[in-house]
Image (tube, rainbow, N blue to C red; front, side, top):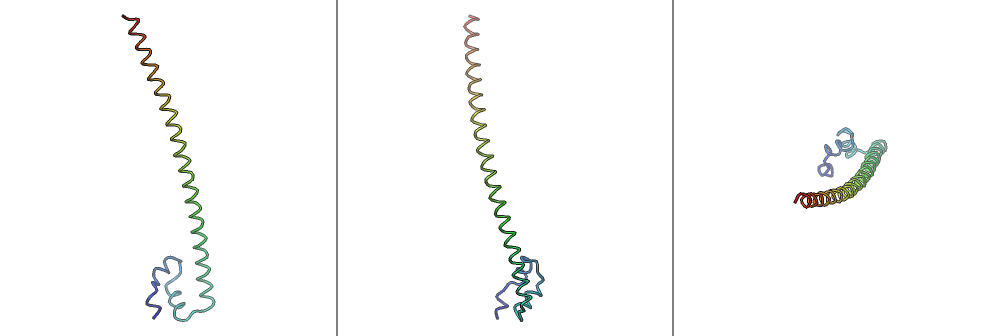
Length: 99
């Protein structure tokens, strides 16, 4: 039968409804049971959309953080390179004055 092809336990856990509700829905559906199931599906769909939106926001924030970090890294590298160049120049001048 169709009931054997449906994983009632999985559905019950996924939609936070008792297994008996799904079993009754498969055996003798009523308007109230169908409405209850559709309400739970709607709730889960809204939760899914909220999680999806939060994931997208997090991905955008991560991308912005990565870009900012890359820009700061480039600025710091330029600063370090300039410092090393100045240091080398000062050492050369010191050696010239010392000899």
